[in-house]
Image 1 (tube, rainbow, N blue to C red):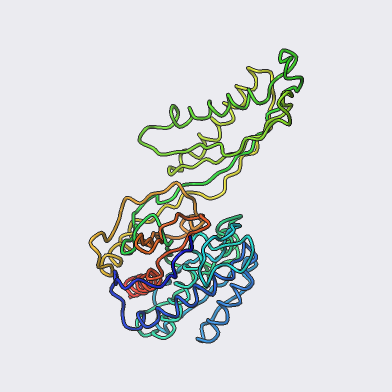
Image 2 (image 1 turned 90 degrees about the vertical axis):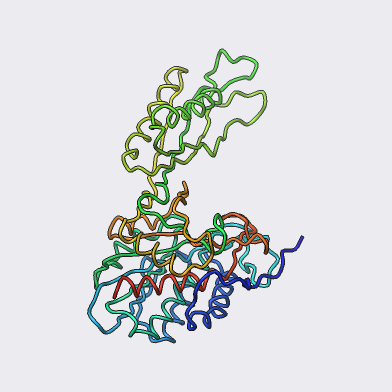
Length: 403
């Protein structure tokens, strides 16, 4: 069945100032332009060109080509004061879009299935508003358009390139459009919001042979199956019940024929946690279990363990600023949702390790418009009313922080 034509809802869940309300059609236009032209991490050439052209039109000073395709726009109020950074990610995912909408992806096998097109449009709208209303704040705002959040990660190379310096950033904020929350809500909390993300790949080396003569072999599939089961004891028996952690084996490849005992088996998975103290325990226990099971069965192993992104941990003071601003803007009864943690990962965490900040979720689902598919789904889409809400919340954060 074809998806309905998507237009912003008539509901007004947020108090928008007239300039932002008038900007809403352009936000939708920009978002849909980007949605039709998705690009993978560090390949966001068209996206970066589009952003740079808009900033140039508005006379916004900016640097391009940071960490390959990243952009930093600097909006100086002309008055001394603090420096607030706003971060938006730009990249898409290797997914074939299934939405039947006029603005569906024109790039085969690539899709904005996580809302980064919306993040970019919101950041552009914020840049436009602040450039036209420099009198409304003091200090400086730096807007960071970041590549490759979905992988391999663009935040770290942008930090290494100095985007938090000259002028030095005092705090940073960012948002994620979130289809796990309905339109008219914002998920804001201090402390851990999103989990640390780590991956592992393991090859179990057994001894292959005939399926009818198992005693001459070391069955790598049997060994690997025991490893998969034993790894589940890490969270169940090594992590405090008051903590949250996940160990998931998502890949298991072995065997070539039904009557052949596989020589090797390959496993791959992900590890997630909030508490940084678990960063040593989990990989240590993972390897101890793999080594122990292999030793007991006469097999050997090779393990690659790779930390990707640390946990997203919000500063209490900046989170309270965002919460108060969002509460003042959102008019729906649900309003602020403090318990909004997810085991998903985000490289916004690297920025938050450098300066105090807050990353928050902006509800974007609308069941009545069939806009509630989960992130990374080939039919993901969101209620574009959230775009104006994002600009309004960002602008209010700037005004409250910088003034």
